[in-house]
Image (tube, rainbow, N blue to C red; front, side, top):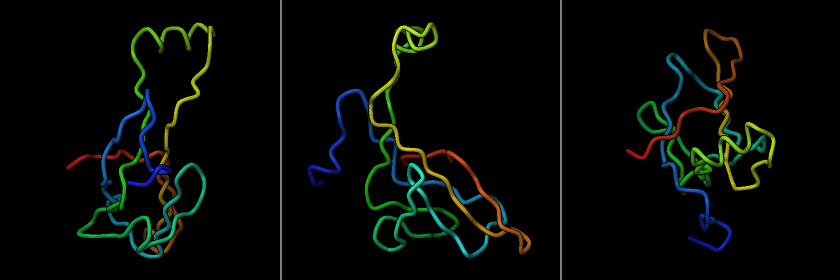
Amino acid sequence: MSDADEIPKGSYGAGLRAKLPRGATEPIRVHINGVEQNRGEVWDVRGGEIVFTRPIVKEHVSKGRWMAMYLGLFGSYRKNEQVDVEYSLDGKPKLAADIEITSD
């Protein structure tokens, strides 16, 4: 893992996999925080799943931190990657936003 891929304090590696939406067909595009990622370099499709070459980083939010953000005492500035998938379903373009990342 390079310095750019290190997981910062307050965040965790959520996993390397995400299930494709049921019936998803090509073309498939993956975006992390709104930026399209290169297939084969950052991700690929294997057996109905998107498999990433590095862990997707999510923010760890404790109950106290969540409450403070809810009350507007402060915001969140930790690394939290959102993964969106563009795909085709019955010939129509679709988008799955902030898909679930799994570790297995």
